Length: 112
Length: 109
Image (cartoon, rainbow over all chains, first blue to last red):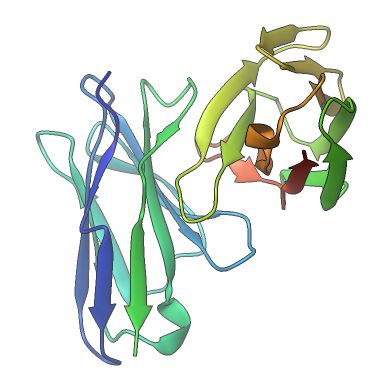
């Protein structure tokens, strides 16, 4: 079965650079969630989209922005990167925002 | 605010030694309690969804149960390949899933 696809899988950026993470949800899923997970931490909710509109917002820095496109894929844009942004970034998708969410394999971002 | 607390933080068992993991939650209007398994460096893998008190779900050596205040993940006769971090999450009034800190389970052969 098709799963959530994230790209790239690994990314190394320097401080103050910009990064773009992409997420392709499971076909027919209309809700996308973004989470950040630091070492030994639980996933922290950043932002979610339902039918291309922002549906919920968590602890997402103002330096980050995201959107969901007409084909339901989503992109997380991160600017002015800081060392503390180094983490695993997960995308998840669900149907109608009321069912279980399935996670991708994540993007490991390292800021040096 | 929705909150999830998991215990214990870490658990070591011998192969075949059954046990239970706990997930206590406070949420306004539960719209689902979810169990995930996560291996190091990988994305959380969905295991179960529970919606109402008294509900139970089973999959191989795992069984999840739900009350109005907590959920248990029972593991029966575990094998070394069951070693992972088990995450509990709830969905309340908002769409987001709120996660607990997880239980790091190690099964020794």
